[in-house]
Picture 1 (cartoon, rainbow over the protein chains, first blue to last red):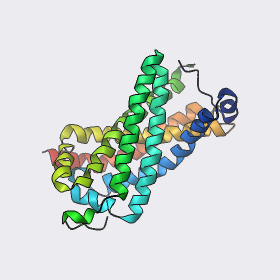
Picture 2: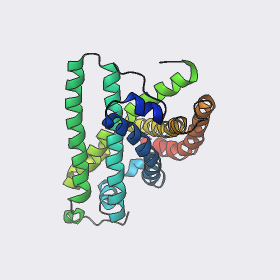
Picture 3: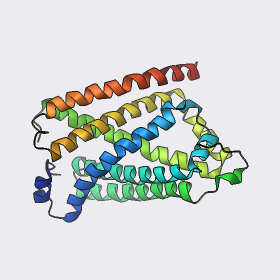
Picture 4: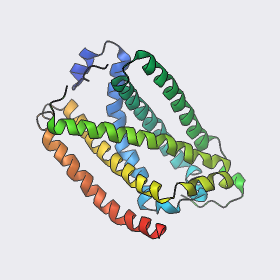
Length: 139
Length: 119
């Protein structure tokens, strides 16, 4: 089971014997701060400016086809998924007692994370949304 | 580990909202990415998630995002200032108040849309 997590940068440096745990501790705070702005902006564009219940393929494709949104969503996708994956990793360490279960859960979960993130990146950078012969509005 | 009281509730809500938003995030990315296969494939799946239960779930997920974001800022303040831990309880009440302050206008916009779409 995990020990109590450190509360200050100095405690984090002292507590973590490996550089990677310290790096993840810092990452959660830095990515979290950036994600506040990226996520609120995303929710404003997709839930306030439009009715989320009316979102159709044309709206999604128009957004995914817009260059600045490709960049915006790439940062949002990568930071959010790494932040989420590391948070779930903390939870697996906290709540799964048997090391064999922890290993199995992490193996499945990391694979899923990589697959979903790759899927998202493909949808952003490898697709010509004009090829479906549906007129796309500017996002 | 637990001092109980507000700090414990702040942690429990942060963990719960984080796991809930993470669960949503994976489904959301997969769902939106399906747009790469065109309107015939992605359209019906987007429609599927416009059902009432998912619309209400989306409101709860947004509430979770707002709480998790603001309480995350509280954690950053506690970690990187010398006064944050001392005032963590007051900061948490600030987090709850700001979550409500942001949530209220969002509900004012979104709830009528959901009611109209479902009736």
